[in-house]
Image (cartoon, rainbow, N blue to C red; front, side):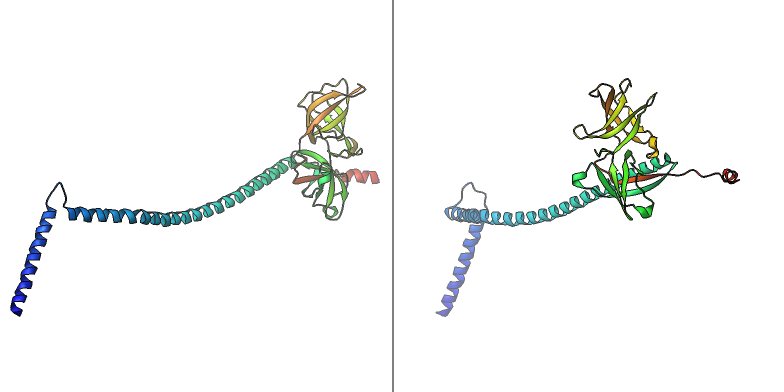
Length: 290
């Protein structure tokens, strides 16, 4: 009896294998239609993929986008830091360029001032409510600075020293409208035309050049320089350029308006001029003593 059941199991196993092989062969055969079980299994698998594919793909895309955003944030921070660095370098470059041009212009100007001792100075202060009147420089009595010395920038004449302390000085600008801030000037041309700088017109942003003879022929664009009269300021210092001319109220003289050659609004470096006394000939001195 046990032997029979053993043979029966073997027979069932063989039949199952045969059926399985037949099914595999049948399924591998090229057919235009599928059996119902095959259709059921294929549709079930497709439905399962549809249900899980979109959420899985969305989740994977979310983490991928998150990683990209993190990378973009790092790159953005790095680029921002570089832009800040470039901005600082650009500011330093512009400042160095401006300083270099100023110093170069000062060197060129010093060659034209052989009769004067030149002392370079830096502007250290300026009052907002007296912007067009005074500047303060870092040179004083210990540096040989004295009142009434002329002060220039590389572009031209800007004012005179008024007050001096041990370590710094006050410079009155030519744009100050104080009644005592007047000096003689000349219009350059075939014939020198004399007049007086008397203040500053804030509306026109121009120096007021008065007491010009009514018959004097002045044209726009002509240069105006210091005359050197009075022995206070050196001669031939550039003051500005004529931009307008009009007769005075009486009609006996003319008034011209000058665009300052120097930028009186933005001054960083200046030069203080001291007229050097000519050397005395020793032989002449001996004769005078005799």
